[in-house]
Length: 139
Image 1 (cartoon, rainbow, N blue to C red):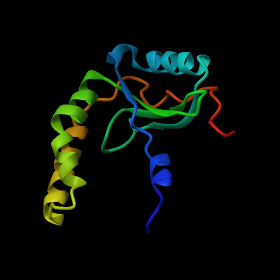
Image 2 (cartoon, one colour):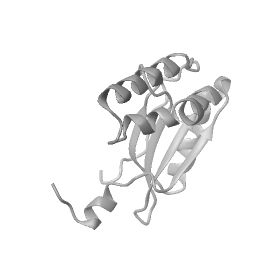
Image 3 (cartoon, rainbow, N blue to C red):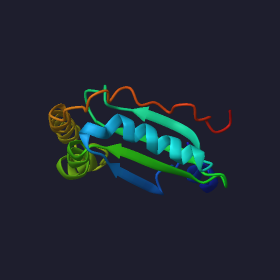
Image 4 (cartoon, one colour):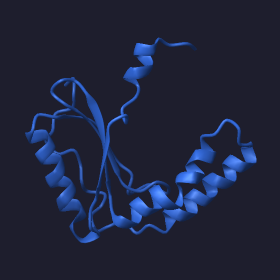
C-alpha cells in the first residue's frame, strides 16, 4: 500500500525525542511531576505507554503534542532500563527490524533482547504512573 509523503510524515512521532533517566527511588513521583509540568506548559498527551509490566522493553514512552501541533516523544527510564535499551539491546533491535536478517537471526536477536530486559528490575510502583489529568490531543 502506497501512502503520500504527508501521510508518512504524520506517522513519525519520534523525530523529536527526549529521554529522562530517573533514579529508581524517585521514579514514580518524578514521572508524575514531569508529566504534570509538561501539561502545565500547554502540551497535550497524545499517547502514554507504560511498559514496566511487559516481559520485554522496560520504561515509559509518551507522545506529547505541543500547542502548535508538533508531536514529540518522551522516554522515561531508570539507569538500568536506559542501559538495557540503549547499550545492551540497540544492535539487537536493529537486527530484529532488518529486512536483510534471516528469520532465525531476527528470532535469536529477539530472544536475546528479552533475556536482557528480563534482568531489569522495575522501580517500586513503576506501573502506577499514568498520564494523570492531562487531556489527550483531540479530546
